[in-house]
Length: 92
Image (cartoon, rainbow, N blue to C red; front, top):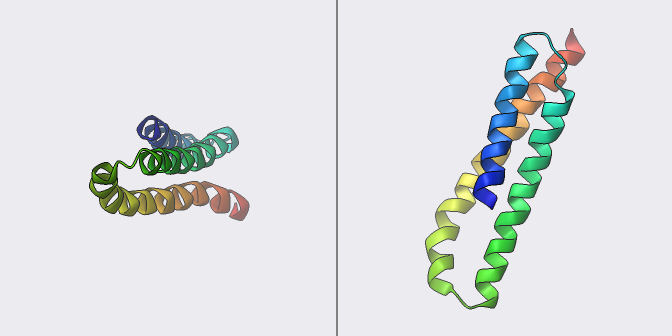
């Protein structure tokens, strides 16, 4: 589930940039992207918690080291991409 939500967050972030370049209102895309980013983090945490409860230690050791770094990068990228349209809009 977190993969689907994360992909949707990335798509809406880039739609946010595309429509901002075209001079259109991007508030709904910005909100959707940040919301989907938060839901991605919640879904990933929920998946990890489920693995702990069923004691799937191999699954945790396989997923957590790489995905925790990837999620940090994606969250920071989402904040920066959506921040571009927010702060650039204010300065116009």
